[in-house]
Length: 90
Image 1 (cartoon, rainbow, N blue to C red):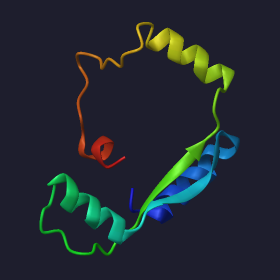
Image 2: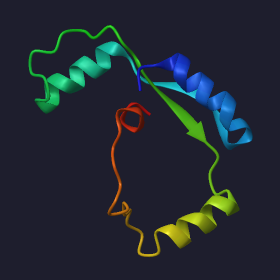
Image 3: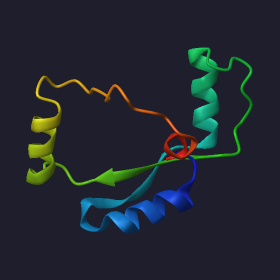
Image 4: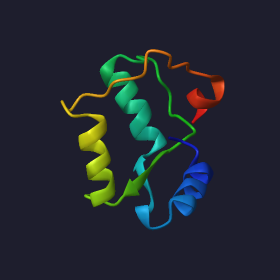
């Protein structure tokens, strides 16, 4: 994500479950990758940098949820799932 401010807010709200926000790729690296993969062959240097939040691994509570929600290891969405603009933004 390029919105570092939002990720810092998210990290703060998640408390001990996250361990901070770090830069994943610079704007120049993103443009280079876009050119290499053909996603945007004429990509110029982007003005945004990509950031990612880090989470703690192997929290027993979440491991239990994962086993219950995804017993075969694949994600499934409810049949009545509706992607709203708010959910898409998040």
